[in-house]
Image 1 (cartoon, rainbow, N blue to C red):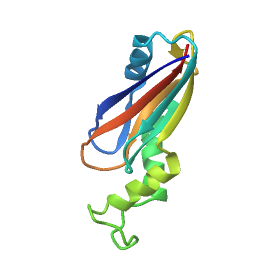
Image 2 (tube, rainbow, N blue to C red):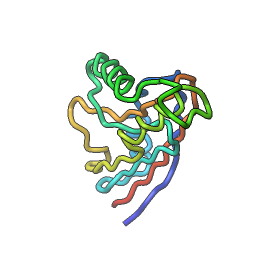
Image 3 (spheres, helix red, strand yellow):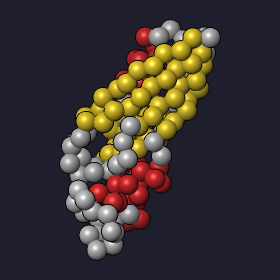
Length: 139
């Protein structure tokens, strides 16, 4: 049994989904572990991780719009607004989506469906540099 640990830095342009599938797959390939488990962990409280469809861009747009409806920016709705009106909604959206993914690895690649991609979901309006910790365990 072997393991590898690393980190990806992901620049964002503000709210939206940033696909990181290629970077994650390249990282897994570098470590030559053919069978195992990959864990990804977003090191932030206002961004999250998703496995989602990577074919139709409308899916990403609809997800952003949906989360804007269920956790709207409203300065009067939340006690916490230290960093502006998008601060607490970003924390709520992260709580609903999560910061960790576990993906099996087979034949040296993450096991994803045909239309699945790995995304960092930025919940803040301003651009950020987000960090994703990667841990690969296997043989």
